[in-house]
Each structure stands twice: as C-alpha cells, then as structure tokens.
Amino acid sequence: MSNILEIKRLTVEYKVPEGVIKALDKIDLYVKKGEILAIVGESGSGKTTLAHSIARLLPKNARIVEGSIIFHTRKGPVDLTKISEEEMRKIRGSMIGMVFQDPMTYLNPVMKISDQIIEGLISHKKISKKDAEAKTLDLLKKLRIPNPEYVAKSYPHQLSGGMKQRVIIAMAMINQPDLLIADEPTSALDVTVQAEILELFKELRKEYGVTIIIITHDLGVAVRIADRIVIMYAGKIMEIGDVREVFKQPLHPYTQGLLGSILSISENVRKGFILKGAPPDIFNPTRGCKFHPRCPFVMRDICINEDPPLFHVGNERYVACWLYRGVSS
Image (tube, rainbow, N blue to C red; front, side, top):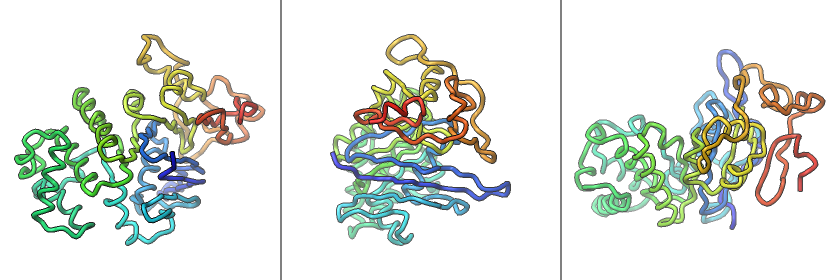
C-alpha cells in the first residue's frame, strides 16, 4: 500500500510572551492510503499541532521551523510547507477535509445547514446551486441523517450535538477529499453517539476510500476505529504500530503507563504501571528522553542525556526508547 502523506523532521514552535515553545520536535511519520491512523497523547503532546500543521491551520504565533509534509495528490507529490496560502486553499477543503472538536465554533449560527455545506462545494467546483443542493441532500442521506430535508433547512441551534457533528463531517466530505483529519471528533458526545460517529467514519472509508487521521486522547476510540496508532508525548513520537499489537504488547514505557491507567478493553485487568508525575514543563524542556523523569526504567547513563531516535523493531513497529537500541532492524 502506497503512502498518501510523508512527514519528515517536522518541527513547529510557538512564540508566546513567556518565550518559545517547541510543540513538535523532528516528527517523522507516514500515512498509508486508505488507512485509519489514530494519533493519541495527553494534552500538550502536540497531536493537535500536528493535525493543524498538515492542514496549514496553525495560529499566527506558530511557525514551521524545519521539515517537510509531502502530500501525494492525484497530480503528484506536493510539499505542503512550501506552497503559498492560495495554493493551500485549493487543497484544503477539496483534497484535505477537517472535522473539528466543537461544531458550534465552525458553524455559522445565522446560516442554514444546506447553505454552509454548499458554500464549500461551490468554492472548489464549477457546479450550479441546484446541483449542489441535490448533492448535499444525497450526502446527508449517506451519513444516515434522519429527515435530511429538515436538517438541510435548519439552523445549527436547532440540532443536537451529534447531529451538528454529522453536519461538520458532511462539510468536510462534500468534495470527497483524499484525506480526512478529525481532531477529537467525539470528545463532547455521549457514549452512544460517539459509537455512531466512529462507525460513520468506518463507513466513509469503505464508501469513498478516504484516508482518515483521528486525533484523540482516548485510547478506547483508537482501538475501536484505527488500523495503526501513533503515541505522542511532549512533541515527540514515542511509539508507532498496528493498534492491536500495541495494545497487546506496548513497548514504550509511556505507552505501558497509558494502558496501565485504564482497564484493559479485552481483559478485565490492568496493563503496565500507573503513570506518576506530571508532563514536562513546556518552558523548561527536559534534556535527553522527554519521558525519563516519569520512567521507571530510566537508564541514567543515556536516557537523561540523549534523546532516542525512533528505532524500527520489526514489521511496522517503531519505538523511541533506548531499551530497544539493540533490537532495531
């Protein structure tokens, strides 16, 4: 399976009154066409910054210091860090769709739902309003929205939270993008609606062949939907692998700690150890491995002085931990 996205040495910094924050530190990652990839981590891990870097939606106080984001379009590869904002606008919304955490932040309260979806379609394709309305209604039906005619004519405040999230997904999918990035798409929803939204993403992958990146802090979401999982901590990737393999046999101590903090999904036992301590101070970053102050297996001769690379430890497993330096393949 070929890659749709290849990220190399991506480094992003935020300039704030207190100083400079390195939100991403030399990220290397590939995303395969047609897969669902989950990016998981605590608050401040850099997962949302990574998503917004791909879509070029970083705030004004952020800048990409180093690295490349190669997006394989239908016309060939494009480095998203190098193109102009005008060129990026043509890609964003047509080839790359975004689903955000809080629908009300991105829905216009005084516009009908159909008009908001149609706006994204007409801005990217030459299509009449009549045809756009028909395509919008068809998509709402495919998203299993009950009474789609009513929803299309409604305003955001007339819809439930789950329905608004479906509308945001419709806005992201109206141009049938190749890549869909969903940033915490279920965190504000109850368990039943969350399950429905996750199932909807699976159906979109099956129906349209879209590649999906899910950003989440919830390991349960990752195991229910993803093919592969990326574990992030303090702007670094700690572990990458098949989601079931990672859950069955977590390699990085941080991954083991995350899993140890929740009940196993398949077995009613705890895995690993309970995470202790707090995430690192973003203004005073830890030297060496970012996780070493909280790690029960820290080797003081190397962990506190040298930042480990991502070791390839077999198949599609990668882990950034000095415990695996001799296992690298």
